[in-house]
Image (cartoon, rainbow, N blue to C red; front, side, top):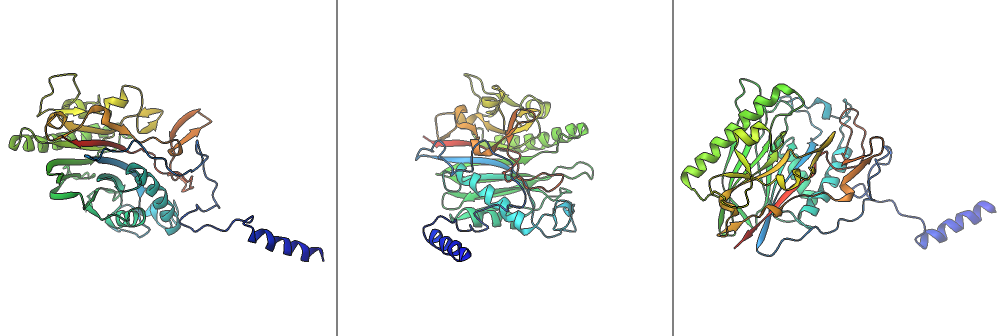
Length: 364
C-alpha cells in the first residue's frame, strides 16, 4: 500500500511540474564529468554594448581545438579521435559547438557579427557545423586547409547579406620545410567601402626557438600591407589574430611596424596597434601566469580618419563576460574558462582558453 501511495504522489507532482523534464543533448552538458565552477551560473547572455545602426563589427576568436572526429591521414590529429588520448567523440564535439555558439551570439548581440575571424579550426566542415547550429543568418565562409602539421587553420565567416568578398588569398609562410598556419587575406566591400582584412595565427611561443618564425610571419604580412599601400595610400586595413606575441615584442613592433596610436599626427600609411587600449592596463584575452595581449587588433591610419569608415581606439575591446571566466581558487586567479583539459580530455564545460576580441567600424 505504501508503494502505491508513493507512486501516486510522484504522478501528481510530475503533473504539477515539480519533477523536471530531461533536457535535450543540445541544451545540457554530459553529467558524467564534473564541470568547473564558473564565476557565475551559465545564465543567458546579456547584451554587450550595441553597435550603432551605421556601424558594423569585426571580431576574432581563437576557439581552441575545434576538431572533427574523423582521422585525417595528412595531419597529426590522432589525439582528437574517439578512443584515443582525448577520446574526442561526436558528443564532445556537439558540446563544444553548443558552448562556442553562445559566445558567438554574444559577440553579435544574438546574431552573427558582420565579420568574424576564427583560428584553431580543423577544416571547413567543423566551421559549417558550428554556424549551422548557432546562426540562422545567411553566412559565407573563407577557408583553406593550411600546411600546419596539426591541421588547424584560420577561417573567415561573414554575413552575406551585408558583406561581399571581392578577393581572397592565403599567404603561406616558407620556413624551409617547417609548416604553420597560412595568413588569411580578404578584400571585402561593406556599406560601399573597401576594407582589407587579415586574420592570423602565428607560431606558438612555447618553444623559444619559434621567435624567428613569428618574425618571418610579420615580414610576410608587412610585405602584403606595403603592396596594398603602394596601390592606395588611404587603404582601410584591419589586422587581427592570435599573434603569440605581445604588442611590444619585436615581431609586432619592429618587423610589422605596428605602433602605439599617437594623440595626433596619424599617418594614413602607418599601422597602429589598438591592443594597447587594454594591454596598458594589464588586461588581455589569454592567461598564462598573467593576462597576455597576444590576440590583437591592428589598423591602418587611414581608417582612423573622419572620412569614409572609421575606427576609434576605444572601439577595440575584449569580450569578457563573467560566465566566460573561471576562478582558479588554488592560485587565486581568474582566467578564460576552457572547454576541456588538453592533456586528459576531461570536459570542464567552458568555452576556450582565449577570449574573443572585436572592433566596431562606423560609416561617416
